[in-house]
Length: 420
Image 1: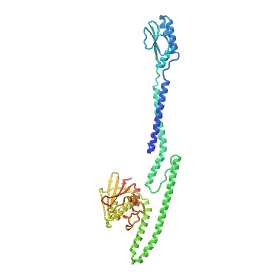
Image 2: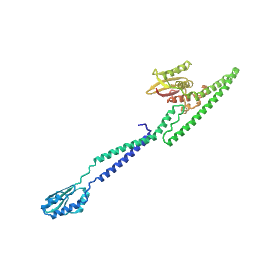
Image 3: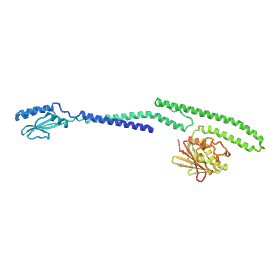
Image 4: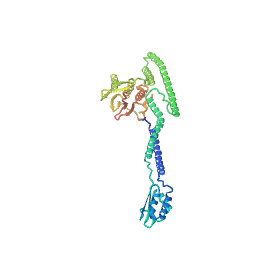
């Protein structure tokens, strides 16, 4: 059975419940009509025959009674003579209305009628009950078959309504981890296809808008590099100026901002073929490179090797940004990695001043720079954490920031171990 959404399961359950109620009503009606149709039927001339027989016996000599009884044929009846009545219902005089009432009430007749002194006619009439067991079994089998057929029809109907929704959900989940949008297949009924087509159209417009924005920013950034290069060349003639160092610092900041902007709009979004690599070796290499530059960086791991399937260069960029962020704003970077079940967690801690609570989520916004910990003196354009977060999310990972109790900031990154 194909997977159904929760709402589809509820719809299917409601349909099945309705079918069961309908079948239950059908069973009750069928049982009612069966018992009504197969009730014992007393021949219409039975009462007349009994009355006629009693009168004949009363008018004939006792010696002729056996012959009279033998000649009188009443279906499903037994007749006998006795000196006393054999049945509880005993009549001293034949009364047709009483006989009709007995038949109507009991659907059978067991009656003793007085003939003369010490002579009673005992009359028993019990129509055979029709044996409709086979018919009932056939009806039950037919109802079960109908129930099964209804289940299949309901499931088919719900599946046809649910399948396009399931396709939409799977497409959105797939596109969530992809840079380029893949159009949703146009399946389902007319309304659903129209909805999916509108979603595809809107997404195409958004993709085109983002593409145009990237092209514009890239073009502007490239155009800015030319006058900056000219400025740097002209600054060579002003080395003796007292403001030379400050102006060169500003030019370098502008170049870094342009470079990070281009990286944000290009490098972090470039498609890279995923591969298997040792995640621990990658992190250790980044920490050693930073330590070689005389930065206070420490790395610890309880495991020696951890194979991960992902984009090596993009993840290098992401963790390099996080480690550099800890070094610049927190004076040190303590990197550790742990494996918990099917998850891997990497923490990067520093001993800086931390962040205000209202800044913890804002630091991931493009170009955001806090008033204290992210001052202009540290350089950069405020895109490092933004790029890192996007790369981590591209690998179905999560990133969170928390202030340490002893001071400083802790960055926690978690990934599912995807070894496809």
